Image (tube, rainbow, N blue to C red; front, side, top):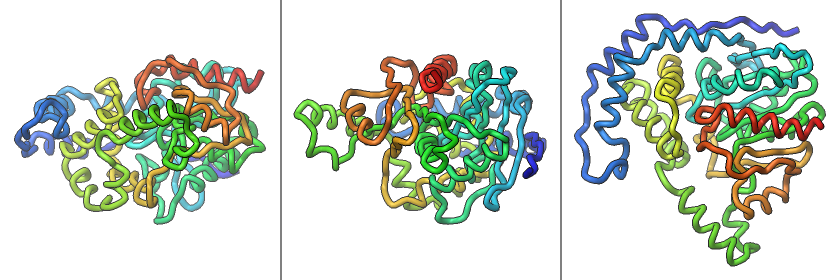
Length: 358
């Protein structure tokens, strides 16, 4: 047996005080011309959010909430991995490993975990380089994360389990099935399967091409963090690591780009984990270790399901490389649905695995 070391989050008070002092000393930029978010995060919006982070947000209360989940660390492939492992009271529950996205942490799932526990033993690891997990060396990959997760589930004693994720987790979840198909029973992701690329245009109908143009207009909106973090992650990390206002602005921008409306305290808890662990730069490896933007790759070894399936074009393309058994439409929520709609998200995960295990 490989040891699982119990873990608790215990941020020194000096670090909490330092955060508040830095926020109080923020040198605010002036508001540029333009309407609302046309030039980025509006100054008034950010000042209000920063003041709440400094004077209204209670880190110690949020820290206690996080510590209510059983947490551990273990070493896999030379890296310390942090994880939540919350067992169901139901002995027949299916083990389920959830992989968070970027710029998120394990905090992404804290509100959905209680909704899953009647049916699942829940495992939520922190991706290497994020939060309390050790940062990887250059050349790390989605495949390496997937192999680590398969090893983690083996160590926990689970020989039959499901995988789930959104955003970056939507890349990892199918890959776990690729590397461990003998033990994975199903893959559920929030969305992204069947997303069209230029290579698909030649085979599109006229209606699909029109649909594709609309999709690409949406996909190109906002700040291209992939390009930015491929080019100069070290340069950007200085500001995020030194200035909480800069870090706050970056996360506010990205959640706005993703059209997410997330509870303010939950948003700040996720950001605070980045701040206290100093992982703004190390969490960017999925971008800076790539050469171009891609979309989640499917797999046909085990059944797949999605929370938000997308239009008919997506489904046609997804069916090429996946065994799709769950493709609902009209589910509520945006990009990080586990944070926005935990009840609906959990219900959809249960519905998918109910079909798989029937």
